[in-house]
Amino acid sequence: MNIVNIEALGNYEVFQVLRCNRKYRKEKGLKTPALEREVREYLKTTNCPEQKRQKIEILMKKMKEFGLSKQEVLQIINLVPQTHVELYLIIANIEERFQEGKVLEILDSIKTYL
Image (cartoon, rainbow, N blue to C red; front, side, top):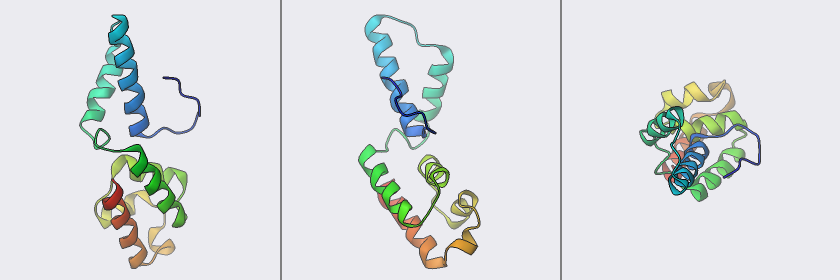
C-alpha cells in the first residue's frame, strides 16, 4: 500500500498501512521491522482497530459543520474524547467558540460515529 496524499495521518490510517505491510511481508516471507511491529501493537491497544472508514468520513463531515480545524478533527478521531474535559483539551478556545449545547452535539456525534 502506498501513501498517495501526504498529509497528517490519523491512527486509523497508520494502522491500516501497517496491517497491509504486515500481510505483504508475510506473503513474501520477509521480517517485519521491530519499530513497525511495536507501533502496530500499540495501535491495537487504542480504538482504531474498531473504527470504520465510513463512520470516520461521516464524523469528519459533521465536525466540519462545527468549523473545527483539520488538526482538531484528527485529534478527535485519534483520541475519541468522551467527556467535556477531554474535548476541552483538544479544541482551542472551546468556551469562546461554542455554547454548551454545541459541545454536547460534538460529544454526541463522537459517541455515535466512533
